[in-house]
Length: 398
Image (tube, rainbow, N blue to C red; front, side, top):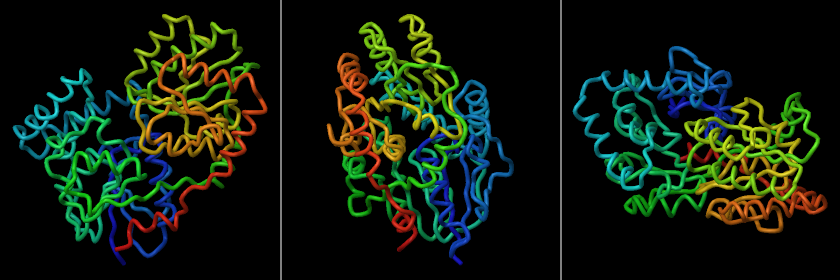
């Protein structure tokens, strides 16, 4: 029986994390001895690891990785990583290498800045594996490349590499360690190869799993909105980060309210931008109109109870949240980025808009004013199919 290791950064509530759990559920009890290791052993989904999967972290912490307490806990773990395994000078050098490009962009990304520290300071695994899979770029990829013993090493990239903040210098040649590198969509392949063109022959497309039957079942469970609002509802799902552009969404919501729409906008997600977003919400007088609900383990009743799903992001690889909204027949508005453009066909199963508050508000307004159009787009979205577990099992076929 082949011994397989999957490595992921955390198991917080996110699309890549849920996709991994779906894959592991399909692999559990099969022809492989599956092991899972979390770089930072924390996340709300840790207790959802399927039976038959050996979780190598000695303890389970199901706290959030994105709220205040979670970020403080992660800061402590990162500090411990700086001192563990020695080589302090090398760890400091990795930070100094990653910092200048961020300063030039005027956007400091602490996770990108510190992933090398975490990778080099994480507790090492003594076992040799037949196959090791880095399920995410960054810390997981660095750890598998540099510190895991395996006959074959595979990696999965989920993001637009040119937009996300990773650099060739920061990666330090880690991708040469992988026999295959999977990207979750064609839109992610090209940006990755712009940074690492030497990997061209080893890059393959492997879509994430979205279990549509399970999502539709979970959408019928108790939960969802509890505020008694009787108007229309907008929903967005995503981490509160620069990528997701919720600062722009808040401005769009102000325009919708000024135009007289009876609507509230809800966001499921947590992240480092919460404080800044809350200040902007208050400054525009939207405390009752743009609501940050945090993370929930079962977001699907919220999708089902919403009138429009909005995914207006600065960049996107391939959004699982959009696939979930399509599965539940939501009328969808997305920003016109490469990944979103591939997932939504304008005026067939959703609407595209530019990432300007005026255009976002105008596009949403078109749907708020036209129930028939919402239903037509939602029904078309519902018919879209997602990758089956059998397709994604190709990950372990050599």
